[in-house]
Image (cartoon, rainbow, N blue to C red; front, side, top):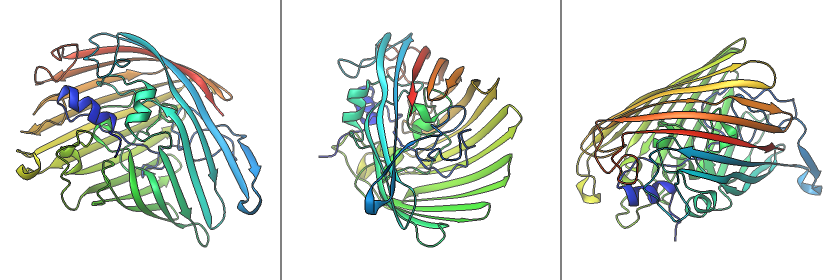
Length: 399
C-alpha cells in the first residue's frame, strides 16, 4: 500500500488540495552554486546561503571505487498564531520543537555506473500549511529512503540516464530545509510535486542543459507524467531555465486521499532566473498551472493558478547572510487549489543565517495572508482566520 503524502493528510482533514510535496536534489533550475570548496558534493543540491562541507568523508569501496558519505543533522523550533486544526496528535501546535533533518547521503559520482542514496528522517515546514512533525512526515510521505537512484554516465559525462526515486524538475526551491535559503518552503513550491518514480535523461552542451523525465507525477505509481527542462547559463552572473510538464492521461484514485487529484491531472510551467551582483543574489520565478474538468474522477470544474516569487540574498560577509522571499499566488475556476476555489495568498519571509564551517544557525520570521478564501479552508482551529505569522529557528550541522 502506498504511503500517503503530507498533502493527502492535510487535504483529508482540511478539505484543501493545496499542499503537495517534492524532493529536489537536481531540478532544472540553474541555482547559484553554494560557495563550497572544489571537492564539496553537488548532490543534494543547495542554494544560497548555506554551503556543503568542502571536505566530505570518502571511502575506498574496492570495485565500486570512491564512495562519499555526507549528511545533515538539524533541529528546529517554531511558534505561531492561528495554529491548527491539528492533523495528528503530535502535529501543528502554537509552539513546538522537532528534528528537521536526520539524514545520511551515500553516493558514487564517477565512472559509468553511479548512484545516490538518501536515508533518514525529515520534515517539510511550509508556509501557510500546518506543521507536521518529522516522524509523521517521514512515515506518511516517502519513507526513510526518500530519494535514491542509479545513474549511467557514458562517455565524457555530458549525457546520463537516471532511474529510481528522483527529485522533481519543477521549481526554484528544493525539498529539505538545509537545501534552501529559508527554513520554510513557499506558496509556489507547495503546488509542485517533490519525489517522482521514473526515468530521467540529461544532456549538457556548453552553457545549455536539458532534462526529460517520464514519471508518476505526484507519487501515484501511475506512470503518465512527462516533464522537461531547458537551462541556459548566460554568463557567470545570469542563468535562466524553463520547465514544463503534465499528465498525458488520467489518474483516477478516488479512494486515496494522499493524491492531489487536481494537481496530478493537470499541467505546470516554470520560468526561473538568477542574477548575482557582488553581495546580492536575486532569483525571480514565475509559475502557471492548469487543471481541466473531469467529472469521472471527481474534478467537477476546471481550475488554474498563477504566481510569482522573488528570492533574494544579501551576503553581509563570508559567515552571515540575510535571505528573503516575497510571493503571490492566485487561483481561478471552480476547483480548490489553495484556500478555497478562486482564493489568493501572499507571503513574506526573512531568514538571517550564520554558518561557520559545517555548523549553521538561522532565525526566520514569516507572514502569510489569504484573500477570497473559503471559511474552513484557512488557518486556526476552525479554519476561518485569514493570516498566520510564524517565528522559527533552525540549527545543526551539514557534514
